[in-house]
Length: 224
Image (cartoon, rainbow, N blue to C red; front, side, top):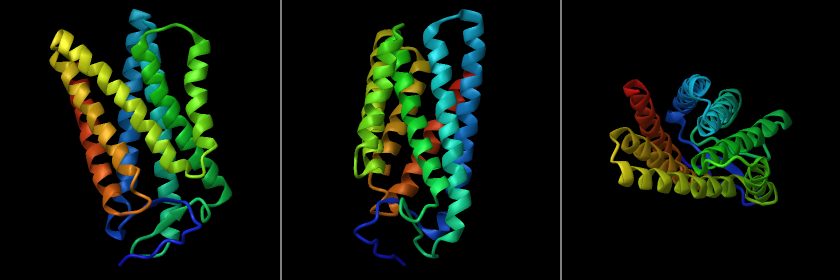
């Protein structure tokens, strides 16, 4: 049973009742996997001292924190909402959870920007400052923050996918191909979440696609 959203509210997503709990479990899983990736990257950085690996580690630490915040928000808020198709909006979130939502957006965006910065393999803190600040300012200044956030994520991920595609074409490394497909799935997931404030199916499908992405990341880690 669907409920009609009020036009003046800004919804986080629409979610079918049968998926409640599964989404939080998946987000916790994503947070754990990204934390493991970050930890392994930090270990490799201690050995190699390569800046791009350090930035890769920082990026996944930021993404891990964002997933854990998102899961916590869902666990703490969803049970208070109506049955059927619960509606999470910026208006009916408490002040502290609204801050948590903005923290999730900021951390995930900063994580993706840091990944882009790592692929560029440059050493200029002023450029990194601009790369992080500009998308966050754009999101903060938007009336539809959640949708603009996903559009920014898609834009950043498209660059990362392009980078790994070129790297795979150049070296034909099977490990690179796995990571490429993982980022393609992550790109598709975030593209689907653009529509999650309006329809229930994109939220579910996007989580399943994202599970595929982190399954590939895990497989790549095991091979490594």
